[in-house]
Amino acid sequence: MSLNASLIMEATEVSKTYGSGLAKVHALKNVSLSIFRGDFLAIMGASGSGKSTLLNCLAGLDIPDSGEILVQGKRFNPKDSRQLVELRRRTFGFIFQNYQLIPTLTAEENILLPLAISQGEVDGSYFQEIARRLGIDQVLHRKPQELSGGQQQRVACARALITKPKLIFADEPTGALDSKASKDLLEIFRETVTDFGQSLVMVTHDPVAAGYASRVVTMQDGVLAESSLSELADSSL
Image 1 (cartoon, rainbow, N blue to C red):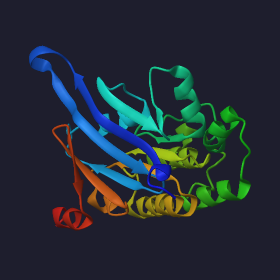
Image 2 (cartoon, rainbow, N blue to C red):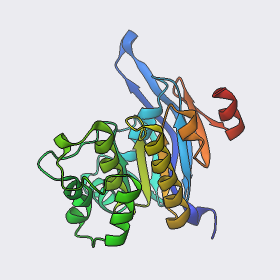
Image 3 (cartoon, helix red, strand yellow):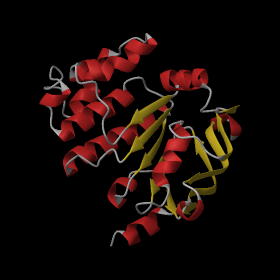
């Protein structure tokens, strides 16, 4: 496979500002980043560093002021609602900090919702394995308000994984989980990347979580820098 054939997303000179005048904030400053098939990429940085803004721009949840983003070699225009819907159905998966579960649906129905929308077939064994590994197999009949915050987060993670998307965006996916649930989820992420060739971009402040990634980048004042795993280990001491 050629290098270009394995490239799933490429961002070039992406910039984003908020506000104006003295209140103007340069959240992203000419950020360039390549994401390949099978990448497990962790984006780290302090609060306000631009890491969540970068994730949102890559995922089409926010619109850059300048720069270009290619998805599988095609220009990605987040203003193109048709393209965005198609990518969300077939290419992108999302794990949000605030879960975004539908309160009138059960946990199982929330997990399977992306397949219902895209009219995809349910892989029953895969569904059961995800639910078991995430520790939610006994609460699938419950609605979100009947679940703890950690259980809701795990349901949201299962929903993102169920369609086996090519590229998953995860914003602090372990934030509401205890250490065991976090470890289980991160191992599922790593297996997903290894076994299915999916790619995952994860924003995290946790060096332990980032240690599961195959690549780590750090945002600081809107600028991106690659970090080695040894540097990551040193920073956690």
